[in-house]
Image (cartoon, rainbow, N blue to C red; front, side, top):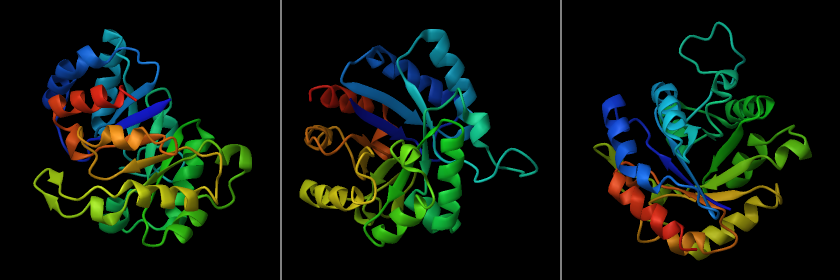
Length: 239
């Protein structure tokens, strides 16, 4: 099964999120070949979780981040334990967090372990700048049976460049480049699923998901527009 995870980043208040959900809801039916998820801001998760359950939408929630610590005296942090039963996936080590918040590989490794401890699926974000170090240190001291549960996302810096207002402007990586990086990542974890993220839109999603080596995609700014996200779902369903 292929997966689409819309990463909303720091966009949408509650009213906007519910309006988006109302527009997209007709498409949120069971699709045998497609898993649909969104990663809203953390404060929206409980509201959207309630709405999704009440309406019976086939939509999976994901978190944009998680604390590297257990629950406890860590003001401002959201623990993996608190996310259980609400989200399936957790983005870990996104390039924006590495750049803007100084997250290093040791911290990312702690977050991955917290996710696995509480049955969450970490999506470890890897770039091509220092992918070998990023990959190996993110999964350091993780047992093989847990390693298979880790998802990797390849996100080239060129595809997630300068922010413009609420969105980002970049250029999607050529598929042959993505496939080359996937083979390199699989040297560390051959059984892991691998997603691609970076300038995914309705006009290119089918080309990426049609490749057997790419298990999912993570659109960013394109997921904010409900009509564009509907087109992404429709085209992704054609594979």
